[in-house]
Image 1 (spheres, rainbow, N blue to C red):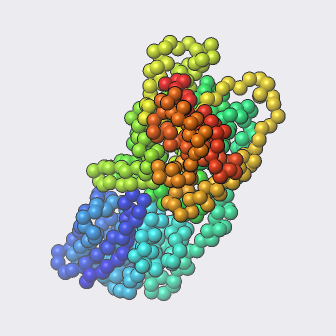
Image 2 (image 1 turned 30 degrees about the horizontal axis):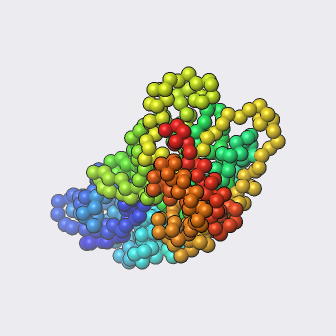
Image 3 (image 1 turned 135 degrees about the vertical axis):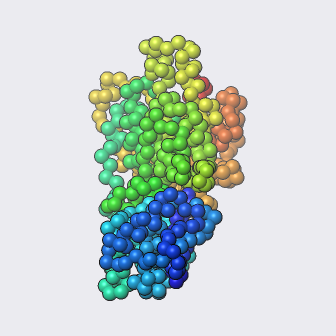
Length: 506
């Protein structure tokens, strides 16, 4: 007898449907799985056999052949355990034939029949909905994650016996999720605030511009000046995620297996701060079977690289393409995956090995400083929109009154974002930093005085075409923060001031 069960797998952040065909035939007892399975899938034979034997059902003494279609894509992971077991139980008559019609199954089986959680349930259920499936049977641990998808009924499966009973006697209650309640429940309660930071008004302004237009920023300054303290407070002034952004981030974390069981929808912007010993693969993603790296886990959020010059140069160069394109393509022997990586890059570094260059306390010679700064390449530096210097804080500043709070800064950022949302409502972007060249010409027109100023800066500072466009984008954001429709000389002047450090140090 032939039974067909629908399951799924993941490529990149997108799921696709896998047809699990189970054939039970007379002959010498055997259990074969075909369709480019990896070792984890091949091990399903023993898990499924032992699981069925340890429940009240008997395992058929027949020749069992399982085909995973399409057969030209390699299958990996234990998520096919449940659909294979369902196919066998349909073949033996324990589960009725109609059970698999219009239904999707995924899950790993333990030897006692318990259905364990699997990674990537959300993108697989989205693919199932796109294919017209109306019922999804997933591990109970993953049920809330799957229930985020509208238009499908999600049944939580805790044990294979519960699944059989569902089709024969006692139905399982479907899982439902209140998305609005999730956003309210998981709303960020920030314990950090910009009012905690003493001094540094210029850097705070630069971070405000960065958050308003999603511009990447580099902070250079001596140890203890507050670079890390400032960076960790940037999420407190950023806008909240909308549902589509949350869903996209949740898909990435689902594939990476990083979702917490009690918080299946990520409603707060990610803040990733990998250690400087991180390899290029941990940043970009990869492995034998490609998985998302730190730059993808920071999608729609913040990637903070503290002590930028201490990272491997190869790891830093990985950032160049994602900073421009907002995606990263990872090629490995097991396949090619493209992950979204539209992150806000915050980077900090010291100006020299001892950290006190230019203060009179520096102990480094000229060659040491050059070698230290050369760890950050010119092409990468050119992709950092804003470059600001963080000066040491003096005693009087430490004892000053509390500064402006994150709440007040965030109100201005939100107002600027609203202007950008209205401006780009018919475009495929949301923020100024993502404007391509045609949109820069459209939305950043300059008057004669502004053009002359920018031309003078372009020639004197020897700017690249990329730096020229970045100055226009930053000026557009500064004008949005000021609530003005046109870019004027003051906006251009401030934007140019954020491009000076590479000329000072490099």
